Amino acid sequence: MTAVLRELDVRSDTPFLVKVTEPWAATGAPGARCAYVVVDGRCEALAQGRPRGLLLGPGDVILFPRAESHQLRSTRGPWPEPVPLHGLASLERDGDSAGSEPGLTRLLCATLSLGGPLEHPAVAALPATVVLRAGLYPEPRSVRSCTADLVHELTLPLPASAVLLERLMDVVVLQALRLAPWSFGDTPSWFAGAADPLLVAALGRIHGEPEKRWTVAALAAETDRARGPFSTRFRQTVGLAPRAFLDQVRMHRAKKLLLTGRLPLAEVARSVGFGSHRAFRRAFVRATGMTPAAYRGSGASAPARRLTGPRAPSAPGPRAGPTDR
Image 1 (cartoon, rainbow, N blue to C red):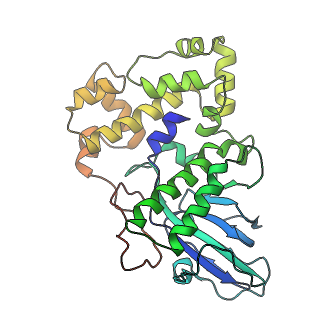
Image 2 (image 1 turned 180 degrees about the vertical axis):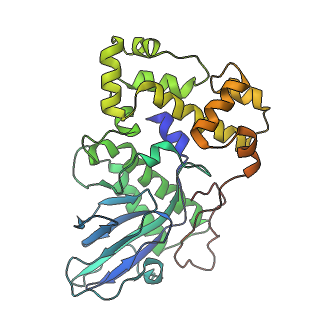
């Protein structure tokens, strides 16, 4: 799990607070990965392609990691025409206490970067929504404390508040992601594999030493399992055969090296476990449809859409960092 979360390089844009009274309806930032924390009240989240909404209560965290369109709205209608969430951002400096109005909901909202300029395979394997429910095991106390600190900093801002806000939101997102296997049950994924105590050693070796010429038998030995049972469990938990997973890790690492480094192509090939540039080239073309040289010449992906709410005049702008689609 540690290796996967490090590769994702979670970065939150400056979060903002939304304070609304029912009935209301709002849309998330188009084309952006988004995270929300329900501070007070209740609301319903509507994900693209899902016939029914998800009911969210105080302390619940929901992520939309695939950058798919979605809505948040009050639990009771009739609902007005949805408006962009950032248009509802609150600039009220009324302290960090919850309001007493009936039907009031407060939300912390932020857009995210996951994986830097590349689409990380672990993100593609995530469900459309990742939900961390308050009060359900294992519920991290740090989410509650970070939420309180976020609201306090937003309502009573201090110098350099944007930096602190982003770091606090990063912690909330990381907690939701590392506990993701509990939120989508038996669905195979990178995260489910990273949470499996029988697979974690093999996955750690793949992430830590992708350049090594791994065999399925060698990976099985890391778990003290025979090759057959190991492969079956790996496929059922991760959703890929061990060799296919190794190929994904290597190709993602190769893309990163090609876009962010200046290593010769032959050195990139050796760094991801290929004995020759020719073999690496064939595998890379098969995985991406491009040669390594052409991929390097294509440059990085375009920046992701960023969405921030209004800030106090003294607050600095969003931090610079990797962006994604």
